[in-house]
Image (tube, rainbow, N blue to C red; front, top):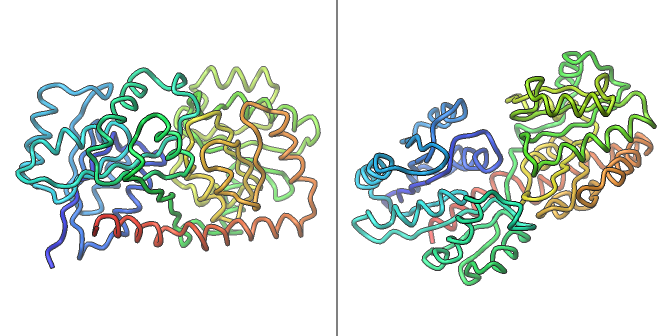
Length: 376
């Protein structure tokens, strides 16, 4: 049987949740059945180099500000004519719209598939270009064979906006439970890096610096918690979350959290970091669909506190705590509740978190769902 050629069109190779999921799928997909090709609309990056190691054709069009010119379009057409894909898979809004354009230059009529990784609480909260693409998507969604959403909430929100409801499905994010594992050795090594002992409470947030991620909410809650527990520390990881971000550093200073906050910026050793946490938090105000970092932390046997955005509550189930958005007092109270539990109760919650990922959201099972969609 001939392999099916799948052309993936993605916005960029930034190391964010949607891109990591695509990388993991390409890493595990059955190459005897499928032959992937990937186009990034924007420039490559350090994560793009990691994609290159997968030994599949990779292209970066180099678009600036996510807007194409004639050279970008010409290169896209050239790639399509070279590979003549059997399936075109859009990935994220820009990739989804680009997939419809790519279809026009195929010598046959390959099915168009979309993947949507975003939830929409308020359309007005999105950037102008993103709002425009979402609106355009309501029209072009009817030309797809299938739209895969990573969360049920996202599916419902988009269909309410006018996306077709006849061709949609939900395929949640999957997690590599062989990579993200609890580890005493990793915990000790990472805490030693920050000069933290086992007795100190470490709460983490892993997210790029963006209004959607609501670092203001996180740090306001942190200030409330420090007033109760002097031995608590907060580890902040993500693009733009470092000492060069003067807005963030000033917020830390005005909150009097300098001795409790560790700004680590971008890191790629996430299994080490998750293993060292007592609690992982997603404090997002909007936009999350099925947060990758929450599932990865759970797989490392870490209890999570999440704001009620997208399918975050469904992901943690009864293994963590869900709080309202933009409510630092509720967030601080949730942390306090976990800290005050007995070590036995905390261990039971931690083990339940990992087991939930193994049972329901393993990477292997999610890849099988994508393969089934491509085979159909």
